[in-house]
Length: 424
Image 1 (cartoon, rainbow, N blue to C red):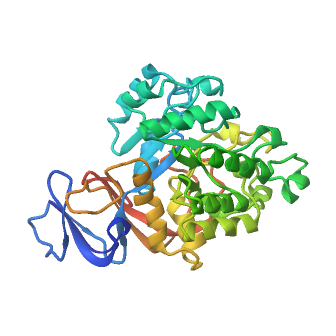
Image 2: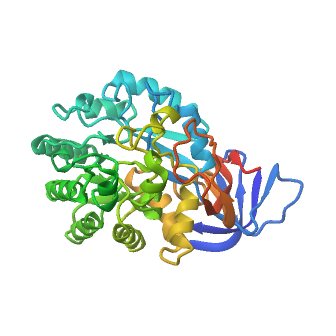
Image 3: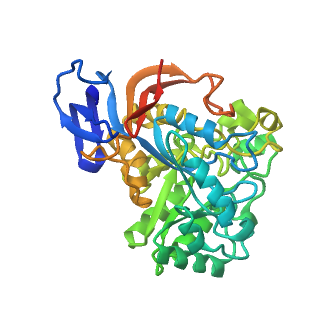
């Protein structure tokens, strides 16, 4: 038996916010929440005084680069990074090499992911080879272990094909997650079209490319009703589109990344390629709209879009480097520092977006501290200040936030009652 003693338990799924203890039984499940005396009968007693105890975080959008691009990251290092960030469940994107468009590729990957210390789940592609021409065999992929479908990194241009995909995902009752950047409206990727792209002599990626495609896809889903997830929202207009769609009763969900909540396009001027990401960091007005959308529930989930690249790749000029940044180990600190400590988003809303909301979308038996639930738990100190280091549990170091002082440090992560990360 393990005992987590004296923490502030925040469990949005059960509307719990109180100081209490958590008892974990020998099977790795939560036995009870209450007031228990610490004594020698417990295998482990974790002192959570001054800390928040919450369900383990769930990230619906990570890239572990496995198979085929494991010089950037692999499922083992990715899982270690996730545990260090307080995550006990992550969902991997399917834009690997080869892409996850076949049962053979998926089956091999899922078998390895099941051996990891946290829950690493896998999406499959919407279209064969992410080419946007032919749908994958979604039924077979679902039966083989896929939890959802996405061509993340590549938007689906063909409306008729997307309608078929939405209808199939509705039939199978699984999420379909879409990357919304219309290539026809793009000049260059990774940097917002505006003052910064002009200063750097880049064409830039306008927010029009995002919100026009998002609006199209939301409306295509209006009569179908699939679980449509709009990925990594960056534009204030997209937030308004999502808000309007929800008011219409359209089944749609939205993600926002910690980096889009914390930073603007100005970061590219000081950090160069490290701040290049798709969709790009945008203006302060966009950032404030994202924060408001998270606070009022328009945006459902915080998702890192953890995107590792090698140092050699990211050392290239902004115009040539690949887009993306790692995010699992800095996510909590960035969000607490940029939106909680400013008073804009309550901590329980943040935890909801990291736990019960993503669990609900994917029908996961997770995201709660209910008695009998798996003891997937994160313990963090919301007041502890720390400096983002130069190295990570991730294989990659492509973060523009290295050296930044953040508040909110993960102390312990448990998955199935087992300690998978401990801050030493």
